[in-house]
Length: 246
Figure 1 (cartoon, one colour):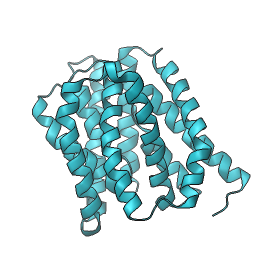
Figure 2 (figure 1 turned 30 degrees about the horizontal axis):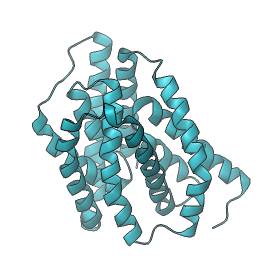
Figure 3 (figure 1 turned 90 degrees about the vertical axis):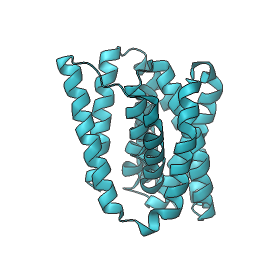
């Protein structure tokens, strides 16, 4: 499929905005990029394309930020997340996706509102035990694989509730989603979604993604912890509302 200049400009702007947000917060690229890309390309292009862009980014981030990764949390999260991704690849055809989307979207909206209320009223933040890594990882990988995004926010909630510092937060999530992407990309490739169009757009958008990530990280480093928590709340709220609107 050929794309005109206006379509290419929209695709590039969508990816740039999505990865600026991801650079600031540590997540959210798929939540923002996929709905915007879907205005000009099919979802069968948008979801695999975004997965490849994120995968390349996570390779670079794992190399750069490996000293900041919380390896204990990563070891807890990788097995359930990969299991959830594999389950999503095999089971999405037999599940009632609309009900699952509504349930996940509703939960994210409620939790995001809780986070924002806690931040505004300065209430104590919710904390959880390491046991929650399994349900968060399995459900996060599962929903991410089916819907191309949204499920990873469950892992964001878990990591945030564990009280991990901002740099470790971003590095650990990048390392975790690298392993999830391995499973997802293998499934998309097996299903034949990596067409010449997807690979051509990937090469075109890699510099856009890299520049946007640098801009987002520089902006994010200027944001204090309280503002960062509110930003997470807003992104979770946007994620939940976007899922409810699907």
